[in-house]
Image (cartoon, rainbow, N blue to C red; front, side):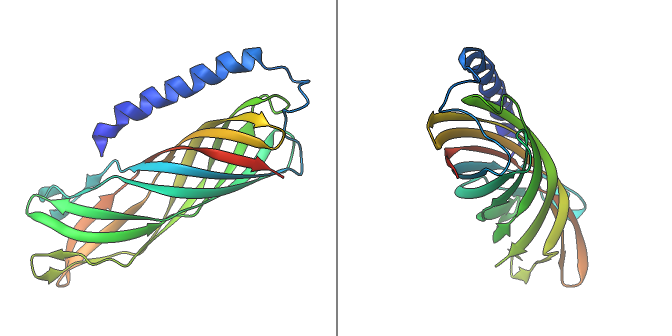
Length: 214
C-alpha cells in the first residue's frame, strides 16, 4: 500500500545515517569484526511486506488493493569475495485482496529472490551493503471470487529486486541486521473467460533480524 512508502523512506534514511555514524567509530582491525571470502551468513528476519499496488483494466476500476503482511524471512549469503556476496532469500506470505465491492479473498505468495551484493567496510563490525537481482514469484492457494464468480490469476511472475541494508556485529559470529528491499511482481486476472486486467504488486519489504556467520 502506498501509505507505507513514507515510512520506508524514513527507515532507509535512519538506517544509513546510523550505519555511517557507527562505521566511523568501527575499526577494521577489530578481532570481532569482518567477513571474508568463503564465509556463509545466515539471517532470520521479521519482515513487513507493504504492496505498492497498481491495477489496470477492470481491476483498476474496482479499486483492487492488496493488504500488508508481517512474516518471518530466512536468507543465506555466500561471500564469493571479501566484499561481494550472493544472497538467496526465502519466505512466504498470505495476503487478502480487497476492492470497492468488498473482499475478493486470499492468495499465498512465494517469492524466492537471488541477489548479488556489495558489502562496504567488510573488515569492520558495521557493514552496510547494497544488492540487486532477480525475483521469481509463485502465487498459490488462491480462493478469489467476485461475488459468486471465481476469479483466476496467472500463477507465476519474474521481476527485478533491489536491496539495501546493514549488518552490525555484536559477537564473534553473531550480528543484528536491518534491511529494505523493493521487489517487482505482477499477475493478471480473468473471470468467466473475460480478461479483468493486470495487477502490479511491487512491494517494499522492511526487515529486522539477527544473523550468524559460519
